[in-house]
Amino acid sequence: MADLSTMRTPAIEALVTASPASHLAALTALPPRTRFSFRGRPAAVTAFGTVLGFDLPQVACRFAEDGARRALWLGPDEWLVTLPDREATAFAGAAATALAGLPSSLVDVSQRSLALAVSGPMAARIINAGCPLDLSPDAFPVGMCTRTLLGKAEIVLSRTDEARFEIDVWRSFADYVWRLLEEARREFV
Amino acid sequence: MLIIACPYCGPRPELEFRYGGEAHVARPVDPSTLSDEDWGAFLYQRANPRGLHAERWRHVHGCGRFFNALRDTTTDFFAATYETGTPRPAGTPADGETSR
Ligand SMILES: [Zn+2]
Image (cartoon, rainbow over all chains, first blue to last red):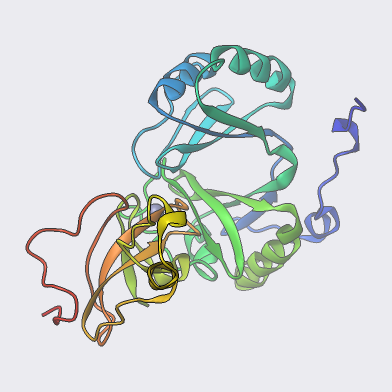
């Protein structure tokens, strides 16, 4: 099969290049990463954890991570797992072996979405321009993640630091989401 | 904005949810043995009460799961939400009664 990894370019490259800097609300595009959507019952979840190197989070709307690997709880039997591209092939092979005979699904969804980061003291406020969730640290602490809405686009939002959020957005919505965030942070650049 | 408590994710804004019709409508085990009238009733006849109504909702822009909710059709008040497959919560008023 053709190696498509060298052909991956951000769908929003021009917007990223033209984006003004801001220490109050920085907006950045994150480098490509491999994403797996995993669904399974408890036996498969345990087996998958051994391949991943840590247990999948069981608490609703929380992510767990170890080094460059991260697992996000998206539903009662659904997780989004992200890891560096170079580990993807070996990981998928090991997971397929470990999950043999256990009802589950593991789908590579790497190309489906792009990752952005919003950081700085105004980060929550910028995201709240299009997202109705309560993003105060009590209601949305560091380590929380969820699918939600940003304007008209569905996103996966996670808080990696008090003043830093990561957004996973479908490629075709990335342009819209970037412009929406850009609009929201105009007064801070 | 109306806040709906997803049984899995907790209280979330209504924008993340979709309505899914009346709850606790069991599909007949063997439809081929049903009369046309009974099959038609299963497909099309719903309660439509004024007051509390047990209905299905889906947290489509969240965990993606279906769940059940007791909602007052006159006030839009959500009296309870509970997981699909579990019975209507004990102690709650019957369909058509008011939520408070
Ligand atoms: Zn939910």
